[in-house]
Amino acid sequence: MFHSTEEIIHRLINNISIMDEVQSIGISGSKNPFPKEAEGDIDIFIYCNTIPDFQKRNVIMDEMGYLLQEGKINVFDEGHWGIGDFGIINGVETWLMYFTVNETLNEVEAILNGDYPDKLDNYYYPVGRCAMLKNINILYDKNDFLYSLKERLSDYPEKLAKTLVQYHFDKLEDKEDLERAVIRKDVLFYHFALDIAIDHFLQALFAMNRTYFPSRKRTLHFIEKFNIKPEKCNEKLLEVVNLGSYSEGINQSYKLLNHIIDELKVLYKEQYLGNGVNFHGLF
Image 1: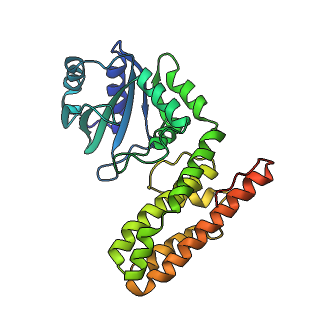
Image 2: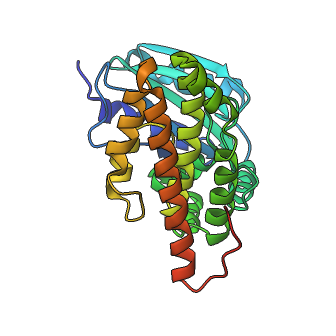
Image 3: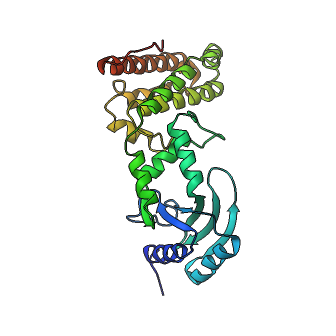
């Protein structure tokens, strides 16, 4: 008998929510509809007073029976993604990530305080955790933990915006690798340095628009909706990348990159002067 992904997820969530330790369950991304095989995966975030032990979580997997094509416990048990279990539902990889409520609250407060202004461990953006929690689809919320957290994150803190913009503008001042690559016309070295510069540019841009930077996915889609951005920002970013893909275009790419960075700094200065805020130079 065929069961839809929605039906299986509903049953799985019900089983998980029965555990005494579990306070809240949410899913990142869209659940309307759930992805099909090869379209993506399903990320389920589970917040607990304490993490249910291996045996309890194993029972949950076993109770799903044939509805899970595969089930594994403790696929990972430390780091930014909590305690992780794994299953396959109708061909779709499904991740169950367990976190404690206290650790989550402490992490969010540290991020909002500006303690983690840049990505960690190559690709984890702490502020991206705030983006996920702000937009998480709540599936179960016994004591309104996720609801309260979404409320907490609904207003982007001014202090965080200023901290992130200052940090990433400072990083953009380090042009040594970019300049060496331009002089040498070294395409691969240039792209290494360019990717770092674009990352800092984007994080500053998102902060200026009071948007938690989620990751490098769908960046152009976000920028399209921003009110504060350099003129033709998406087109210029794509041209920077395009020109930097061959040795004779590197110099022009670098000039255009510097141009949009300067535009962004001017916009930031105007933003704060326009709001009557004392501006203590970034230049």
